[in-house]
Image (cartoon, rainbow, N blue to C red):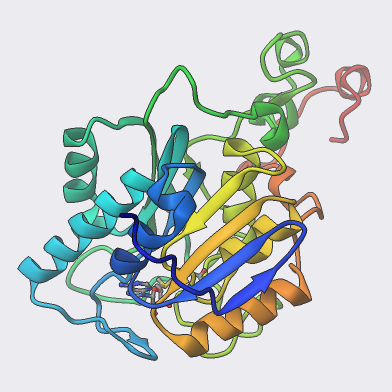
Length: 300
Ligand SMILES: C[S@@+](CC[C@H](N)C(=O)[O-])C[C@H]1O[C@@H](n2cnc3c(N)ncnc32)[C@H](O)[C@@H]1O
């Protein structure tokens, strides 16, 4: 007998959205689409076990317990994922290796090990400053995944900085555009803090919208079903809903779930503003002649 489906705490229609309050390890097996393995895209940004004040979740488990917790939620997500589905995990240095090994052992294939680079890590003298989190991109079947390269192209350095005419002739990455590199940074990619317009009160670990916009556009289509087991401040649902994806979320804290729902209703700040298509070149354009620049349609 299949278990009784849990009751969502927050619901929207068109596109459908449901947010459940509780422990994702207990909820996922009871949510019908998850039990049936129908989720097209999972984005998971778990607690890092860094003693963050998450309203209700205790973010300071003994290491062994944290690793057990990690494997349990990963397994619940694998069950929920469709055979053609993709799964992303946002995780720092100290547990990235364990997650990669576990997902590989469970038969998933890694497509990319991306790095989200930010420049506001806390100063320290004893070792290099932490300035990255890993964005791990796994699939069940590499030949059947959804991959929309055209939806996430950005200007290539070869075009904007070096004025290389070959970048305008290539079949892949046309008109000087390219699929972004696997290290992600740029104007709107910083940690969300201070007076950033995106900032939600009481959420120390909010991700930038542009991060979710890239993942969701690249790995899903309108109408697809997305899941975020650690909904937090609601970055995944607000972007997913704006991009017309269906959404399922779980969140341990009732207050966070409410805040995420209200944020989703209010809508995103930057999605659709072209921020995922901006150049990330770090050098000024090379000094080429005005004639060449004019031919390439570039400003020097
Ligand atoms: C790192 S934050 C997620 C941040 C989110 N990506 C955002 O941009 O706002 C982790 C969230 O997971 C929630 N959480 C922790 N353990 C959980 C569990 N077992 N099940 C569901 N949610 C949990 C915490 O309350 C917290 O809101």
